Image (cartoon, rainbow, N blue to C red; front, side):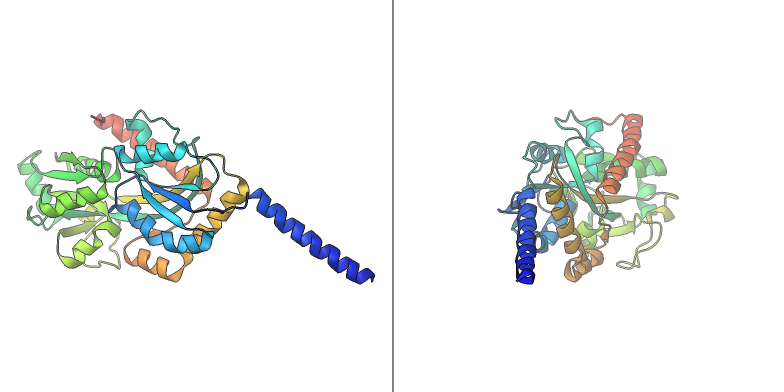
Length: 322
């Protein structure tokens, strides 16, 4: 009799503990989750969102709906996320531009205080890509033409201050050439302009340009890593023509500041499982994405470091938003 009472009591305690856990999370998740992508469809951040959303939905326990809110180098969608309730039903994917927008825009949110950092999802090597119309098939040929015709070669970007803008600025500084910047409203429009020959070159993240290399729609002529990569072993590195030059971009997940700890941990666990899923992992890595899945503190530390680094270049080059 005493044993039966003990078993019933233990069972009751277990149920109570589970109920308290659910209450602590507010029954999370009890409805679909919005994943804000602060850029139009077609770019690097959108690629990550579309790649992980289905498996993330399974692991988090609710539908994860991708919501593209592009404009102003990601600041419009990011601001919208910052004003959302910190309940786990609004998540945000950010690009490396998140680390520089506070140096360029009069933003209405704080890069660090307005958000809880969830995880750095991963990094992507950048690739130097030229349009078929330009005729440039090597870094050396492009630099030679740029030296002969200063300012006549242009490059596209996904907006002022994004990696597609700042990495070519750093490239031009290192190669001692002058290039003309043509900004677009996101990575998708930028790549469309490249394919149409409206711009001569871009420095874009590998996952968004790798198919152009495989299909021959554009000239993917060099990679921003220090060594050649297994996905495209025939590609030389950019620093073979511009010694010491490297370029990479990154994508991470954040949420409005103030998430309850159980909710934050639930999201982190679901994201970790998603990025470890064989199908997701294989696709992203084959497309040139290096999965990191960091801790929140590691992610925030990276953003702070990048913010300081690019702020110096922005000031030195007097880069401003028109």
